[in-house]
Length: 429
Image (cartoon, one colour):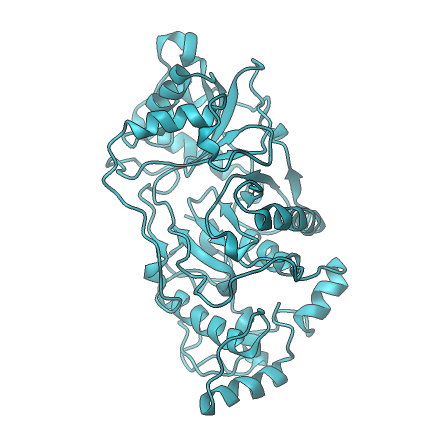
């Protein structure tokens, strides 16, 4: 990504002022470089932590909060790639990571930013142990997703998901979360219903017929969820209802029957969800197979452990969240304390990331597409990702908590006061 040398890109971008050229169909196109640098400016203006690596190849004057006199030459910004081009940097550190094969058709004409409306409510990911489903995953009647969806259809939903955006107006594709940050009291109901996905996670529940779900932004796993209509209703009543905070409902009926659910804070510093839904669009199935090994390799090279099955969700420490005592505010505060104890939750190398395949995300014409979730409540949807862009996804977004402008489709809960502070990003709260 961004293969052009700074000098070559500067010349190319300068020529755009005299004879505008539509951006091409690659991230290293001079028109794309200029657009991404302008997006970086707009994002930071809205207090959204953003990568400035794109500015290395752009000399368009702009005013960032930490550089009031304009971006200046690359030497003043700091060299993003150790004095190398991005291609050289990736080759030296990670080996050969190719772009997307020509057989995978991608949409480079429409705007990526705004192509996926971000959910401001909850995201629920259900274990199935599979990487492909019926065209509509909630039509698999034997699965828990089907039962949960039946419960969701019975709930009122006055909030609508927005779609469409202006790349230079972040407010059109990056929204505030309806939930407070970790450890903060939950004060008002959330109208928007959860977004529901099936995943490749393998259930770690004790009963072989039970499933598990991860719930965001609560940053918890719900184990022992009975795969029945009653189990789905109990999950809604105890963990998913818009009237509940992160800690969920206290234990009911002494944990008997469908109330045997046990919930714990997730051990991951981030979760990456790759669309692999072949029955919806084969491009997602192909790209997930290409992105997954690149993602795992880059994470491991940065000292990050990867959980591909959900096996780290077995035998978690501490009493289940349903058994926490105290007021609602005290229980929410305990959630925040447990999240604070996640290894490297505030950035840097190390820690653990969950990488799972999931059902249709929308926007398969922008394959590869992915969701990235964080304990802070930050949520990103990325598109047009090839293996060659994975180092930026890992180093800038997962390790540093910054948006890569050229990949963003939508986001929730990304704005942070003082975003110019490069040591915080959206990993903090």
